[in-house]
Length: 258
Picture 1 (cartoon, helix red, strand yellow):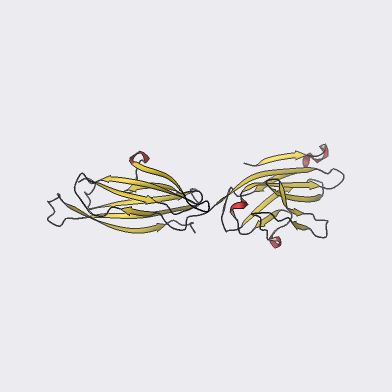
Picture 2 (picture 1 turned 45 degrees about the vertical axis):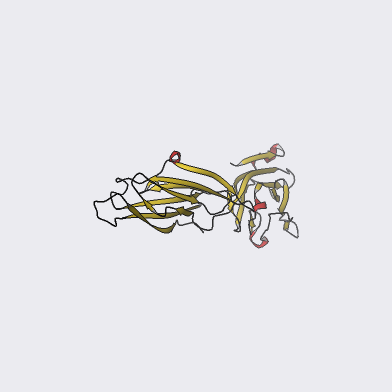
């Protein structure tokens, strides 16, 4: 949400911030460009100031000999060569980079108008790999449960886990959610258990495809790991009293996760 504030004389009402572009989620270690677009009407720009959590960290003053001024603070690493009257380029986004960002635009005499806009930015740490699946080894009879546990890779915040059987989502009520696991350095993980009953219907096509999917901020990243359970009847095709389940794993990586 874009929050706008207006101050100054009645002459300056035509001055406005038309757009403040601050990503709601920035990726740890990457770079982001903050953009502040404004309409001065007939007035002349005096200074553009950028604040994080109400502390000024960058100033652009076109009439000053040193047009761009950087005020260091934790989480703020500016590339001055890519910053100017409409934008600030932040390098190496850190956890301290999260906060409230404000762009303040002031005009010159005689009106001395001042307008500003505010937006929030969070910092996320992407998971470096797909979720880990454990369990499922051994022999099973009909009526037994295949117990599988899925644990996400560490990230900030923790990824959301979902189980799918033969392409169909498993209702959360049919799984055991172990909640969030807090790891050092503000990283988190989640864990969820699936207990799958072994039935003739389940194995009617000779195999069962089980997937644990970890989603992270929707389109930011989505990773999955598949398990294929193949029925091997060591006696005969008519003897279902003892079933050996062979588990094969592979990772599927969605585009956009890096």
